[in-house]
Length: 392
Image (cartoon, rainbow, N blue to C red; front, side):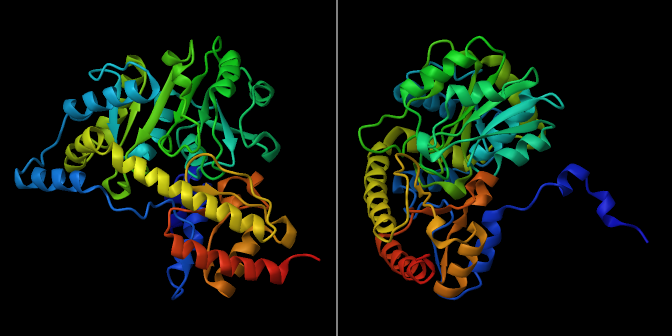
């Protein structure tokens, strides 16, 4: 008998399914369950964006675009990046429009990695990084960030992990799941370590617009000596509530972007045409929508943070993205056990910290990209659950 498993590549068989999806597939089958798990904005895509998409369809502008994306959109992205991070990118050869920032991660890694080269990966972090490194033939080298450092990456931690095989480092800030940010002073120190080394920086800035308080998002590409060796990844999903439109972009030096376009043209051809036209409108006229969403996320952030602390859970204060990462140590449960029991007993779905890296054990990830009503109901249920299992 044929072993059909043998048809599947070993490295793909070795990659586990997402620990996030596992819980939410179950949650979807439980009637009345409240989910605080998926990073899905609950805001509608701004009307101006939807209107531009409708107009694009009416005019039958549904053919392929150039591989790199519509020139008009790339021009707007270049203007946006100059405005936001004060970096000049030539829209003709330094910007690639991708199918979400997720494709950007995959293509960036494939463009720079040779087999066996190492990528420094701060964890806890987004679930896709490690599998994408492995599928690109690289070796993930985990750097465990610590709550006592506000989950920020330190130069000492980087130096400890650098070897002669180190080719790249991923900077996932603002961070999913911790909500940590890196300020200019933090990035200056990291730049001191990386500036004179042949290490590519892949800076995932998808949550850049969701930075709270007096903090302005700073990109490592802004730091002296880092522009030419940094690939900046961003997109429209989080800031503009455009998750299903599947649109992101990468900005880097011409050589790197040329390599990424080469991969992109063979596996994708081009990003969705209607989404590209809509994104032009997002960048031109939706700044106020972003401000309103950020203000509301900030309100929810404070409500949820207070809720967790009031019920006795230690919780780092996030200053970016839309997640909290509370410790569940007081219950004595593992992250998986906590999430499973909470789901079945109280019908609240959250993400085990281990889904974002082994060092996430003892934590859970909760998104506040949900209504205040749902957040308050969920907090009541979690408080009841924690009170029941808290060690005396």
